Image 1: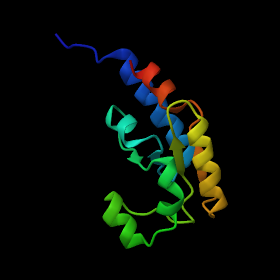
Image 2 (image 1 turned 120 degrees about the vertical axis):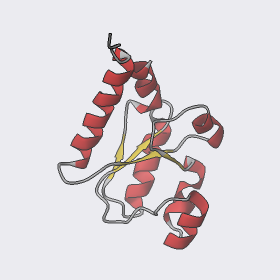
Image 3 (image 1 turned 90 degrees about the horizontal axis):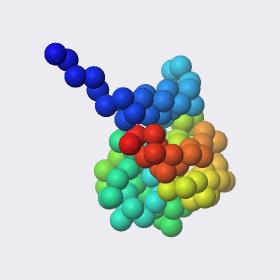
Image 4 (image 1 turned 30 degrees about the vertical axis):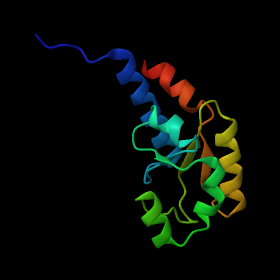
Length: 124
């Protein structure tokens, strides 16, 4: 007998994926940035998110691509990237990060207003 997948967790992840795809548009793919502290992110994050604490985001987004790659083991976002999604625990730091990224020329920066808290509630 087949067991049904954990309904709520799967449904929450599906909703988030749909929201990210919608935000990314038909041709793009959203990149997720967890701007909480390293300790918060280590305790749990949205799968696939890159942790860059909001306190170091400005310097990270101004780094040379090679330095960013060396520090974060990920490709630095490009100014023309359309689908950069920032989130924190409850929404305030995610919004701050989004505004900071936009001020640096990342016009595709978006805030996941529901934040990790909403994702976690729906996941569990």
